[in-house]
Amino acid sequence: MTFDASLAETVRTFQALTTLRPAIDRAGQMMISTLQRGGKLLICGNGGSAAEAAHFATELVGRYAKTRRSLPAIALSSDGSLLSCIGNDFGYDQVFSRQVAGLAQKDDLVVVLTSSGNSANIVAALHAAKNIGVDSVAFLGRGGGQARGLATCELIMPGESGAAAQEAHLFLIHHFCALIDAAFPS
Image 1 (cartoon, rainbow, N blue to C red):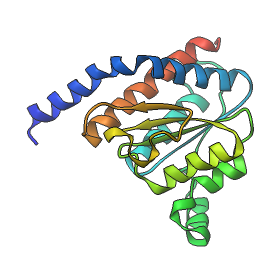
Image 2 (spheres, one colour; image 1 turned 90 degrees about the horizontal axis):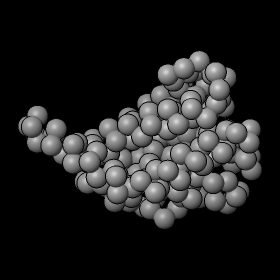
Image 3 (tube, rainbow, N blue to C red; image 1 turned 90 degrees about the vertical axis):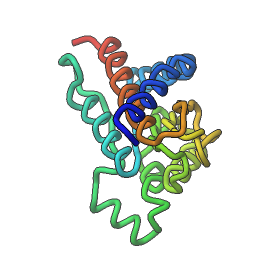
Image 4 (spheres, rainbow, N blue to C red; image 1 turned 30 degrees about the vertical axis):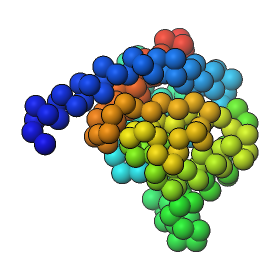
């Protein structure tokens, strides 16, 4: 794909985000409400989405644009020892669902990121959240894949480009960080 074609695809995806505005607003409110009531965000993804999960958790526990109190967020993909333990003993499909089952409490929010929507471990994490009665937000791409319909709130990026979906996911992560910063005083 040429630079111009790639740029055009990403711009189309970003412009189409306005069609998701009700879901974006709902997801932001769910995150703020979770943090205001003392819950934590449990965030997961694979590959580039794992990097985005860690990025999101870092912005909340550390800081985004202003210094405010540290907020509870865990990137479930960041503990290599735990991932290898669960992967070895239960299979890679369970690396996130096992953590959701062990760490999630009723006031928490599970946040998943996948550009395809077809990652078995993401689907399992959404099932685990539902089974224990914890709400979830799914950042999805390419029509939502097998994860479509499993989350409390879905953000399905328009278009068929996984790369553009990940870029839109990061844009939304920063949008949510700005909303969260505004909701919590310095």
